[in-house]
Image (cartoon, rainbow, N blue to C red; front, side, top):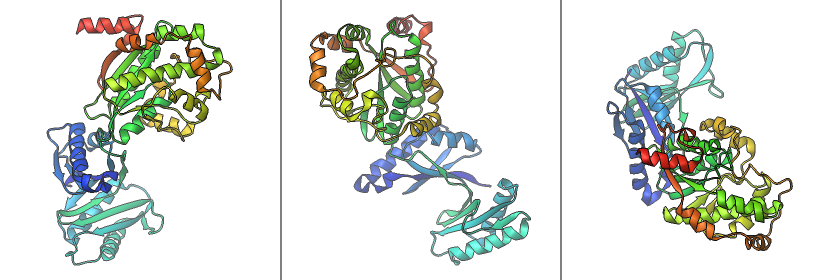
Amino acid sequence: MNERILVRYGDLMLKGRNKRTFVKEMRENVKRKVNNSRVEYIDMHDRMFVVLNGEDPDKVLNDLQLVSGLHSFSLVSITENNLDDITTLAKELIAKEIKEDVTFKIETTRALKSFPMTSTSVSQTIAGEILRSSEFLHVDVHNPEVILYVEIRQEGALVYLNKIPAMGGFPYGLAGKGLLMLSGGIDSPVAGFLSMKQGVELECIHFESTPLTSIESAQKAVDLSKELAKYSKFDSIKLHMVPFMKIHQDLLENVKESYMITIMRRMMMRIAEQVALKERALAIITGESIGQVASQTLESMHTINDVTSFPVIRPLATYDKQEIIEISKKINCYDTSIKPFSDCCTVYVPKSPAIHPRAYIAARYEKYIDLSLIKETVDQVMTFEISRETDLDLSMHGFTVKEAYEKLKTEE
């Protein structure tokens, strides 16, 4: 069989005058991600063929699952546009892939209008030949277990069994850059993934308080960034580590317990804004989900947002926890996220946090905080370049993130 992968583009096909730019970027992203010199590409106006030339189709299909902007893809076989060849290929494919009693139907698309038979006639003829050669297949046109697709096109007849859903969304990077506030929990990496899926180029910022918190909590941020890096254009992502310990200590000493998380988040938002401006990001991205915890009520979000005029995107705002967990597992972040190492937002959780905090009350408490620490902290941000191949264990390089960062810089 002459096998190739048919790649269908997603929402980018709706982009009107910008369609050419989106398609060009989509094609380049596919080629970068597959990264195989033996594979060839045939570009068409609304789809692409990946010609395998004997390469492992599963490997290529797995690579394509990491590319945002694709609608679906199928492993197809191609033959000449005549009914005998199409029927022979269909029977070979069925015999190869179907080994048990199942119901099936055939869906034919006749894009080549000069083909002398209608789509319905092609489907009926091929189905009859398949039934005559098989003892365990049965036709069910309403609710089949298997669908055999036949596309009759100018370049030949395509025959295939599956349409594999892809990420959807838009090509990575075309929406501009966003800065993800990455904790070590379940929600924020999912928010990052959903942003990348919509074409956002992502950088991450993590607030670490070693040695108040364990270095393993910062390691979770590294490991989660590594998983997210798989979906970026060049398989790498920036992780900005913020040395938050001084501010953290100041908050513990001077802020009422019920307002601790609110003011901590306000301080983080101020710092994230400064880093976002420095990195030329267009928005801050968070993993907040409305009402999930005390700091994520609408009142809390409003009070936290009061310290910045920067755009804040919350991809998970209306998701429930189980939906978030399912995506976390899908992107291979869940097992890392649930490791029992607390970050600065969870290590000192108040017994009764304010669920209706007010900005003017938060501002009153902040009069006792040394706000000059914000600039000092931003100046000391440590930036790691994390790739999908990164093998970095911070604990092997120091007791704190700063020690590890300085040692790694020296080794470079």
